[in-house]
Structure formats: structure tokens, C-alpha cells
Image (cartoon, rainbow, N blue to C red; front, top):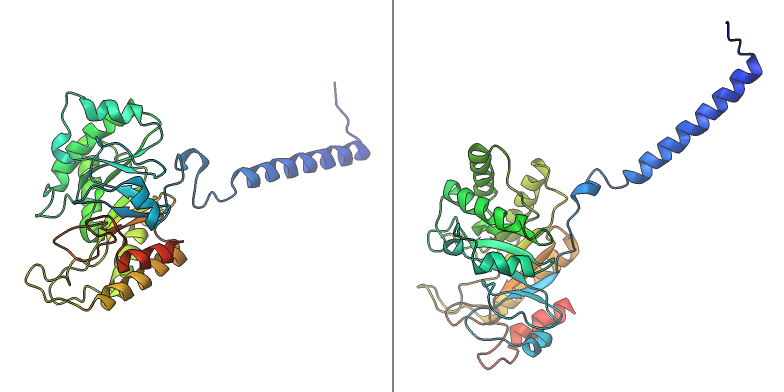
Length: 304
């Protein structure tokens, strides 16, 4: 049997096909909205926190954090009670990662959609001081814990000096050992200018390091993921480490310029000033008694 299609039928068929094509195209455009940066199956689970503070050598209450503002915090711990009304980044230290799936693993499972990080400055000889290869092994076990805590999100440790080359070495060491890249729901950096001959108050250098790390994230396809800056500030200037005492106005100016850039640029997803209080270094937001310092007042006004 020969099928004959007359011209009017052909025109109607063509219009139907055109309408169908337009519908398919619209659906594709809607579903791909923003897909150049974030694929729908790879969006972060929850929005990270924004402005924060690192807690260190004094016990801080929720009310004292309230005085600073609606800040999140990190205290390099996971086993202390979370301060009411404030988001938190939980930190498991490298030496706590053991194959026995102990209390830290159970805490991850119970933490819901919390964010967790492994270690502290693995690339710093004065901190965790592990090689990229060693850290890849630890992170693999950390990943395994997160597999049974499906709602939580995980980060590598804060990488000292925002060193993207170390981050690259860790990623490649993990791939070499396990045949794939690590699960990383975001990246985590620290950024102080500590090298001899450099100005620790140089906001331009501070920005440059963060921008370089964000660029590296783009090159590996992680540009859509959050970038945590879990420590920044000016450590020197309070008389420690064989360095002179600086006028307090210098750190205040650095804070104002750095925080305004972080707020305006959007390069960093969330950040934490170091620190609430630390006897040795510069930059306290609180006195030992928990009252706002002049710098704490400045930080509070900047983020309100």
C-alpha cells in the first residue's frame, strides 16, 4: 500500500513538529538555567553560613556570640555542645580518624545536615603536618564515615596559605590511590600573610591568594561549590614571635578592607575571623571576660 501525504497534511504535520520542538527547547532551557555553573544533581545540600568567627582559648557562650552578631563558628572540635542559635563547622582532627568507626562517626550520623571538616592545616609543619599522600588516606576513611551520614556535607581541612598547589597534590594523590577524585562538597582555606618580607596587612595579597584558589576550583570543575575561609586575620602585631607591636589602627583597617571585599566580591561563601580570643596572637574580638573589644565592635558593625 502506498501512503500519500498531500500538501495540507504535510503543512499541518510540519506545524505540529515545530510546536513540539519549541516545547522541548523551552523545557531544556528551563532545566538548564544556570547549568554553566551549577548542575542540578550537584548543588550543595544546604547554603553555608556566611560570616563567622573562630573560637579558641576561652569558653564562649551563645550570648557572647550574639553580641558579635548572627555569626557561625568553628572551635576545631566536634564533641562540644553546639551553641544555641549559631551554625557550626564541626572539625575532626587527623589523629582522631581510626578504622574503628568510633564516637566521631556516630556524631556525624546524628548531626543531620551539618558541615564537617577533617584536620587543620595539613600542609603546615607547625599544625597537622601530613603529606598530600597521607592526607588522602585519612580523607578516604573520613569519606567512609560520611557515607553512613548521608545528610552531612564534608570538607578538607583549612589549607594554609590558600595553597591550591597542595590541594591539587591531595586530589591527585587520592585519585592515584583510589582510582577517583575525593568527595568534596566544598573547599576550605586559611589565609594569613606570614612569610618574611611580606606585609601581613597587605589586603591585595590577601585577595590574590583567594582569587587564585577560586580560579583553581573553576579549572577542576568545582567552581559551583562553596569556598570556606575558616581562618583569616593578622596574627602578628601584638608583640609575639619576635615581631614588634603595631598600632591597633593597622589591624582595624585591614579588617575593614578585607571584610568589605569579602562581602562585596562573593568569591568566598563563608568566612571566620581569627579569633574570638587568643592570648598569643593579634585580633581578639572578645576580652577574656567575654566583652567586645574595640576590634569586636568594628567586626560587629561591618557584618550587621
